[in-house]
Length: 185
Image (cartoon, rainbow, N blue to C red; front, side, top):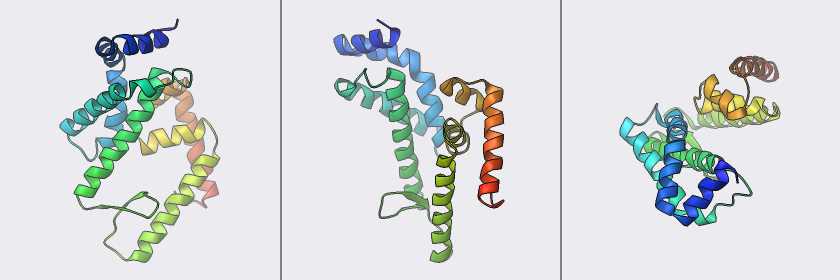
């Protein structure tokens, strides 16, 4: 039985002890994900509260986790990203500078004219399509680096690449995006 499987088994057999071990192992990882999203808008207390909420939600939904579909770390990564984004949206909405469109996508509200806001939204959608078209792992590197604010070292660890490889791929991907988008980047 692998370490991940043992952690999951312990979480089911002895939930409190399992959660304690999982927190010991992955607290820094979850904190890094949340910090990457909330550091520009939230306080340290907001970040810590979000991290606590993530582990609480992980614990609460422990019986729905399917270890065949992914590791404990993968489940925490997805949960951390989703909950950090939700916290970011709540903070931006509370500050009055976030609006949601009909599909539920968040956009920074513009006090300028609606035409500019629509053009910005269309540009953002085009940029996301182009980023996705880069393929893996390039699109992941760009999203992690520029949207989540992760360092090359963290990205390298997550994607099992060398740090200098991450930097080179990011640089080349930005060049591709500039060419594809006609130099507008």
